[in-house]
Length: 152
Length: 82
Image (tube, rainbow over all chains, first blue to last red; front, side, top):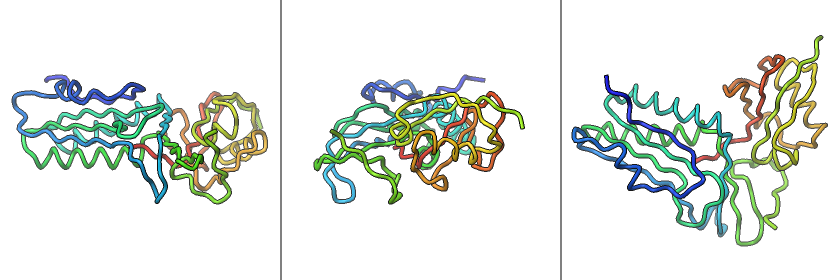
């Protein structure tokens, strides 16, 4: 049995989408679906200048690999690459990259969507948005009792 | 009740509030929730426990889960990957 080509990585370096994609390519795959989550310049009507991602690295690696294993089990024949950025990101940078190779398109789309939703739900990674007005907020930490910190 | 030695890691807003990334505490707490209660007074944390998940030795579990000597406990604010 061939070893799986699938991989999950955390990195503080920019994502080299082209190079990563070629690690998964094999001649039996007729479909390649890629999702790139990028840093956008607005959230909730506010202008975003940049982001910072913080991970719980050991657990994020474990959880990320578990998500890919579940996807490979549920979508047999798919090969999946997934990279999540950490650290400081500027506008337009790729924060999350998911790539699925499969013999046919249906499984590739489905597996990509599955991995994306599982990452957003389960990966222990946090995002801090820095706004044009000087405020900075940890996204999804919405309780009224929490005072947003200033970006300084 | 025996005292336990617990490693605690802080991330995201809890790291900022605690002003540190990790600590080791000696505690008689039996559950993650009890431990969080002790940490809130030690570190002035103000994230409501009902908004947190907890990981013990890198596995998700409930806040009412039991902790034991030598565990690594991490309280996880709502995640926001992707």
